[in-house]
Amino acid sequence: MNVTFEGKSSTGKNEWLTPPHILRRLEPFDLDPCAPVNRPWNTAAHHYTVEDDGLKQPWFGRVFCNPPYDTALIVQFVRRCVEHKNAVALTFARTDTKLFQELIFPNADSILFIRGRLSFYHVTGKQGGTAGAPSCLIAFDKENTAVLECCGIEGKLVKL
Image (cartoon, rainbow, N blue to C red):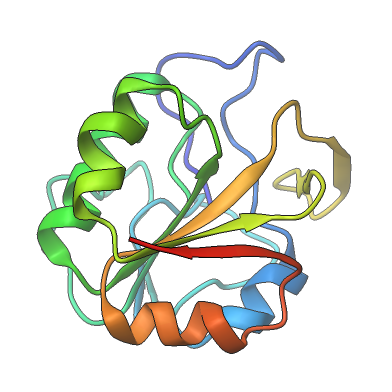
Protein backbone atom coordinates (compact mmCIF):
# COMPACT_ATOMS: atom_id res chain seq x y z
CA MET A 1 0.00 0.00 0.00
CA ASN A 2 1.06 3.56 -0.31
CA VAL A 3 1.39 6.37 2.16
CA THR A 4 0.90 10.03 1.46
CA PHE A 5 4.13 11.98 1.36
CA GLU A 6 4.98 15.27 -0.30
CA GLY A 7 4.84 15.13 -4.07
CA LYS A 8 2.01 14.09 -6.31
CA SER A 9 1.43 12.02 -9.41
CA SER A 10 -0.15 13.48 -12.51
CA THR A 11 -3.56 12.72 -10.95
CA GLY A 12 -2.72 14.86 -7.94
CA LYS A 13 -2.60 11.86 -5.59
CA ASN A 14 0.19 9.56 -4.53
CA GLU A 15 -1.74 7.28 -2.21
CA TRP A 16 -3.05 4.29 -4.13
CA LEU A 17 -3.65 0.88 -2.61
CA THR A 18 -2.58 -2.42 -4.08
CA PRO A 19 -5.52 -4.36 -5.51
CA PRO A 20 -6.51 -7.00 -2.95
CA HIS A 21 -6.50 -9.80 -5.54
CA ILE A 22 -2.79 -9.13 -6.14
CA LEU A 23 -2.01 -9.28 -2.42
CA ARG A 24 -3.93 -12.54 -1.94
CA ARG A 25 -1.74 -14.19 -4.58
CA LEU A 26 1.48 -13.10 -2.87
CA GLU A 27 0.74 -13.39 0.87
CA PRO A 28 1.80 -13.67 3.61
CA PHE A 29 4.06 -10.68 4.31
CA ASP A 30 5.63 -9.69 7.61
CA LEU A 31 5.93 -5.95 6.93
CA ASP A 32 4.47 -3.23 4.74
CA PRO A 33 6.62 -0.10 5.19
CA CYS A 34 4.27 2.05 3.05
CA ALA A 35 0.86 1.46 4.62
CA PRO A 36 -1.80 4.16 4.93
CA VAL A 37 -2.83 5.18 8.44
CA ASN A 38 -6.43 4.13 7.78
CA ARG A 39 -6.56 1.11 5.51
CA PRO A 40 -9.51 -1.00 4.39
CA TRP A 41 -7.43 -4.21 4.52
CA ASN A 42 -4.10 -5.36 5.86
CA THR A 43 -1.19 -6.10 3.57
CA ALA A 44 1.13 -7.61 6.16
CA ALA A 45 1.31 -8.66 9.78
CA HIS A 46 2.99 -5.32 10.64
CA HIS A 47 2.63 -1.89 9.00
CA TYR A 48 4.59 1.36 8.99
CA THR A 49 2.61 4.45 8.04
CA VAL A 50 3.63 8.00 7.17
CA GLU A 51 3.53 8.65 10.92
CA ASP A 52 6.22 5.99 11.44
CA ASP A 53 8.28 6.86 8.32
CA GLY A 54 9.03 3.39 6.98
CA LEU A 55 12.34 4.57 5.54
CA LYS A 56 13.68 5.29 9.04
CA GLN A 57 12.39 2.11 10.70
CA PRO A 58 14.04 -1.32 10.79
CA TRP A 59 12.74 -3.74 8.19
CA PHE A 60 12.25 -7.39 9.07
CA GLY A 61 10.96 -10.60 7.54
CA ARG A 62 9.26 -10.71 4.17
CA VAL A 63 8.41 -7.18 3.00
CA PHE A 64 5.75 -5.94 0.58
CA CYS A 65 6.51 -2.47 -0.76
CA ASN A 66 4.14 -0.43 -2.92
CA PRO A 67 5.88 2.95 -2.57
CA PRO A 68 4.14 6.33 -2.79
CA TYR A 69 3.87 7.68 -6.32
CA ASP A 70 6.64 10.21 -5.94
CA THR A 71 9.85 9.56 -7.89
CA ALA A 72 12.27 10.41 -5.08
CA LEU A 73 10.37 8.23 -2.60
CA ILE A 74 10.08 5.34 -5.06
CA VAL A 75 13.87 5.35 -5.46
CA GLN A 76 14.41 5.44 -1.68
CA PHE A 77 11.97 2.62 -0.97
CA VAL A 78 13.32 0.44 -3.80
CA ARG A 79 16.84 1.07 -2.49
CA ARG A 80 15.70 -0.22 0.91
CA CYS A 81 14.24 -3.31 -0.81
CA VAL A 82 17.64 -3.91 -2.42
CA GLU A 83 19.36 -3.59 0.97
CA HIS A 84 16.81 -5.75 2.80
CA LYS A 85 16.67 -8.42 0.08
CA ASN A 86 13.58 -10.33 1.27
CA ALA A 87 11.10 -8.07 -0.50
CA VAL A 88 8.57 -7.75 -3.29
CA ALA A 89 8.02 -4.27 -4.70
CA LEU A 90 5.15 -3.07 -6.89
CA THR A 91 6.02 -0.23 -9.27
CA PHE A 92 5.17 1.02 -12.71
CA ALA A 93 7.07 -0.92 -15.39
CA ARG A 94 8.99 2.05 -16.75
CA THR A 95 12.09 0.17 -17.80
CA ASP A 96 13.65 3.17 -19.54
CA THR A 97 14.07 5.05 -16.26
CA LYS A 98 17.19 5.49 -14.17
CA LEU A 99 15.39 3.58 -11.40
CA PHE A 100 15.26 0.44 -13.54
CA GLN A 101 18.56 0.85 -15.33
CA GLU A 102 20.68 1.63 -12.27
CA LEU A 103 18.83 0.10 -9.32
CA ILE A 104 16.32 -2.58 -10.28
CA PHE A 105 17.98 -4.44 -13.17
CA PRO A 106 21.37 -4.80 -11.41
CA ASN A 107 19.88 -5.88 -8.06
CA ALA A 108 16.56 -7.69 -8.51
CA ASP A 109 16.29 -11.45 -8.90
CA SER A 110 13.23 -11.29 -11.15
CA ILE A 111 10.45 -9.05 -12.44
CA LEU A 112 6.88 -10.07 -13.17
CA PHE A 113 5.53 -7.72 -15.83
CA ILE A 114 1.80 -7.78 -15.13
CA ARG A 115 -0.49 -8.24 -18.12
CA GLY A 116 -2.71 -5.23 -18.80
CA ARG A 117 -3.00 -2.30 -16.42
CA LEU A 118 -3.97 -2.55 -12.78
CA SER A 119 -6.80 -0.65 -11.16
CA PHE A 120 -5.52 0.59 -7.82
CA TYR A 121 -7.80 1.41 -4.89
CA HIS A 122 -8.56 4.53 -2.88
CA VAL A 123 -7.98 4.45 0.89
CA THR A 124 -11.76 4.15 1.20
CA GLY A 125 -11.53 0.69 -0.36
CA LYS A 126 -13.21 1.86 -3.57
CA GLN A 127 -11.58 0.77 -6.82
CA GLY A 128 -10.12 3.58 -8.91
CA GLY A 129 -9.66 3.79 -12.64
CA THR A 130 -7.03 1.98 -14.64
CA ALA A 131 -3.44 3.03 -13.95
CA GLY A 132 -1.69 5.30 -16.42
CA ALA A 133 1.12 2.79 -17.03
CA PRO A 134 1.74 -0.94 -16.83
CA SER A 135 2.88 -2.35 -13.48
CA CYS A 136 5.37 -4.96 -12.37
CA LEU A 137 6.27 -6.93 -9.27
CA ILE A 138 9.97 -7.03 -8.45
CA ALA A 139 11.44 -9.89 -6.40
CA PHE A 140 14.60 -9.22 -4.44
CA ASP A 141 15.51 -12.81 -3.59
CA LYS A 142 15.13 -16.35 -4.93
CA GLU A 143 12.28 -17.26 -2.56
CA ASN A 144 10.20 -14.32 -3.76
CA THR A 145 11.00 -15.25 -7.35
CA ALA A 146 9.55 -18.70 -6.61
CA VAL A 147 6.38 -17.02 -5.29
CA LEU A 148 6.08 -14.90 -8.45
CA GLU A 149 6.56 -18.03 -10.58
CA CYS A 150 3.54 -19.81 -9.08
CA CYS A 151 1.28 -16.92 -7.94
CA GLY A 152 -1.05 -17.09 -10.93
CA ILE A 153 -0.88 -13.36 -11.70
CA GLU A 154 -1.04 -13.01 -15.48
CA GLY A 155 2.07 -11.60 -17.09
CA LYS A 156 5.64 -12.41 -18.02
CA LEU A 157 8.26 -13.32 -15.42
CA VAL A 158 11.80 -12.34 -16.33
CA LYS A 159 14.64 -13.74 -14.23
CA LEU A 160 17.64 -11.47 -13.95
